[in-house]
Length: 345
Image (cartoon, rainbow, N blue to C red; front, side):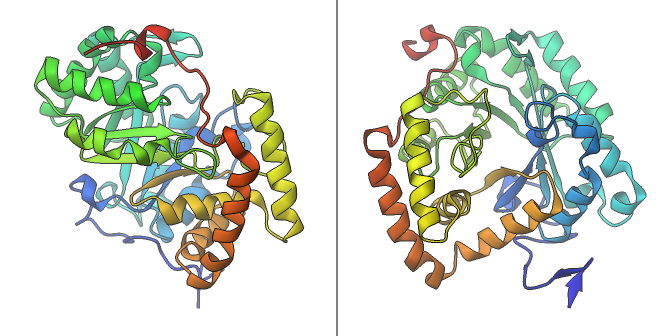
């Protein structure tokens, strides 16, 4: 048997065409399609990407959730056009998948967390995505805004939740400690609990800080913590990372050594790293794919990560990679305003 020419050996990772699981965050599938790939930062011409085919393939295999942002160039527009196409809308009604976006980041160094802008951004996202509600809206990359200055914008997101426009309010960013602080600050100032948090590059074969801090998020009342970018923005692979990648030169050098080691054992570092993240993260992971082959490889990696035979080999390679990384294991890079790191609640 096959689904659109793809062997059903690739089993769905979650419910398919099911409108009973999307009413709350408990129904999130283990994999979410990351929309950052549909952007000039990761692809020179995102308009040439097979976005509709990627989304349909994801939905066919139970990846019934899409994460994007108003900041990701044409990503929202491309996703919205794909979802409105009868080939998808005719098979997958809006209540059979999650739509997740972000607001507050406008450009690389341009942020606006004012209530008026946050509302405008959400309303624009609704139009771009051809929907009348959003399952999640994150305040985007909160570490770049003074924490006290984020509160009014996040309060506006909660107003939109009360109006039924947003179902869940979240915060996203890189530094785990700042995300913890802000979740607690929101609870203190607004008397509301952040529903969901997304951090990227903080749970993978090189960095385990997100998982180590889950008790802190629980103390802040956060129900869901998502792991984004399990390959650490394409750092953990045999190819060179993107020019913009902020990892230290020494960390990049050790990743090259690790990739050479895994290759000598017939294993691509990116495949090993993805399986590690999926196997060891008890929750949802956001993964970006630019073509159908990557989608299928990602779904295969999910099932391989649960295979005891694969795991038996992987854990040995995982340990050796961590040994190669040495004191660069759990190393992070600066992101955001220095004042937010020293902020005292």
